[in-house]
Amino acid sequence: MRYLNPEHKLTVNCPDSARNTNNTYDILYRYDFRDLGQALCDLYADRDPEAPLEKRRVFIITDTNVAPLYADEVSASVTDHCFRVTKLVLPAGEKYKNTETVNRIYEFLIENKADRSSVILALGGGVIGDMAGFAAATYVRGIDFVQIPTTLLAQADSSIGGKTGVDVGGYKNMAGAFYMPVLVYSNISTVRMLEKRQYLSGLAEVIKHGMILDKEYFEYLRENEEGLAGQDPEFLLDALFRSNEIKKQVVEQDPYEKGLRKLLNFGHTIGHAIEKDSGFTLFHGECVSIGCAGAIRISENRGMITADERKEAVAFLESTGLPVRTAIPSADRILPLIKLDKKNSAGVLSFVLLKGIGNAVTCPDVSSAEITDALDYINSK
Ligand code: GLY
Image 1 (cartoon, rainbow, N blue to C red):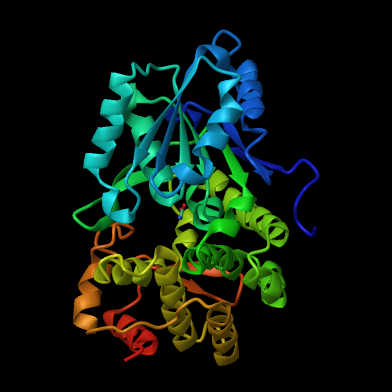
Image 2: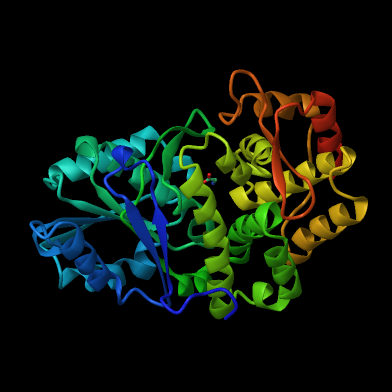
């Protein structure tokens, strides 16, 4: 192992604890769910000896894809340690990531008499993590929640850093809250069960972390195409750890995305617009990969990276099986979607570009002409 520490654990510090129930949280790296119950037990024995896990109600929120695979295992791991575990299985898919589904979660919690000491276990990919996290942030003004990500995308990105929320009117994550989990439990073996497209979607975020902040890690990923292609849990555990370390360093310094954290949106400005335009038929990470190629093109046009760096970076994304191009019907259709993106502020488009691999910068002055050129570059037509 090159990156993973002997504890198989990362601790994320949350500087502004007034907005959270929690000052720090651990990310645990495991190959199964067996340690989850004990980890929760230890967490509450430490945090709140008056209300140990055995006195708390635990609610598993999951979906129809994930429940048959892991719900019983997760439930068994915590059942021995707590008062009662109850499960809600939601329909799977981004199209259900909306306020109606969050209402279903609230109703389920009310029917089952969840109170402020209750704990939500968000078992699933990014959609479940974001929605269950948002419900946790708002139900009786906030209850604890645990992220149990079962996709590489959620393990690498969405389970870390406290972004929770839902889509509104087809616009991604338009309603949400920054709300930290009390624990992230990453069972890396779940990557074995992912379909290739879904796996690659997560890999896009892993590669993105190298591209924006760690050239050496990016090169390490490039040198290990076999480990990446084989969905090998051991290799991925190590790679995921470094990816999470990079994200941890960013969110600790800028939890509410005032500055540094914007760098994590590399590839997302064009990516989100393409994702919406595709009616969510393209996966998030696929769109991020295409968006990275577009942002890399703009970086090259500005002389911030060389043509060789652009070619190598785009070729690496492509070699993993990720798309770097898509059919763009017309720039006129995509540009307004980019300008509407929630990451913009006071009408200023916030674009993340590369000043060399491993060195991302935010650029507020990217013009429509530059974006149109990038859209031409990524247009597969
Ligand atoms: N997914 C980017 C972030 O968490 O800020």
